[in-house]
Image (cartoon, rainbow, N blue to C red; front, side, top):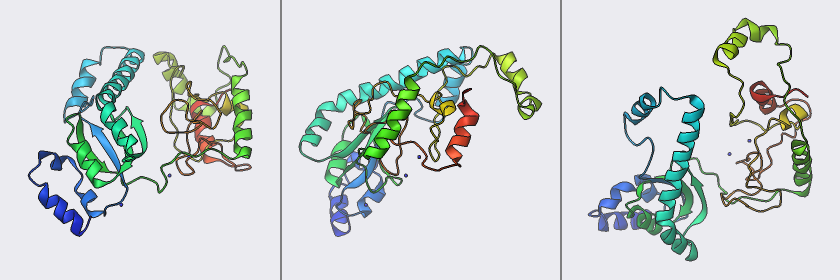
Length: 274
């Protein structure tokens, strides 16, 4: 598991009286009239201002964690869907004119990322649904999702077939290593009835070795198939089990022969009995 000199001054001066100018990251005016990587933050956020997080936490403190998780995820997704729906016509028009590139939608932070030129950025900033347009300092040189090579498709295909094989979880825990017992983990699991079932953990690391104990623990994107296409419309091709943002492919396997930091971390988090 990796952008207007004289022109900018003229544009900035001519638009200085517009209130939407304060919604555009100033560094964008220093990058030249090029395709700029941006993140567009929507106005409707679950946590919008100081104190919101504490207020929400207090409000939800008496509810079970599983209920909070389900409700908050649903609310975050709905906010993102509703905000994007209000801008759908404008975004479709911009896409039709070739004014946006590589658009990707996000829902934990309600917004979307893409590349655009300054006039388009300013046009977006005029919309009341948009809170701010940031220069994406962490964007990679290429924002186009790519299909995998034949070798990688075959290798990931084997992982998919293994993942699809029935593999029920054991009824009881295997022998607990002494170091895990020593830190009181077994007691914590018992007291809190913590099994980990239903919890999804995102791991940002080197990828995994396709061992049965790790493959069976993978969370699969239910709306994606291994077919060289972006089935779920999120801008990522074949992101069945995650995504490699450096190679811009859905290949999340580690090609190392014996050592893999990503496998070590993933095994600690969710490794299954094999």
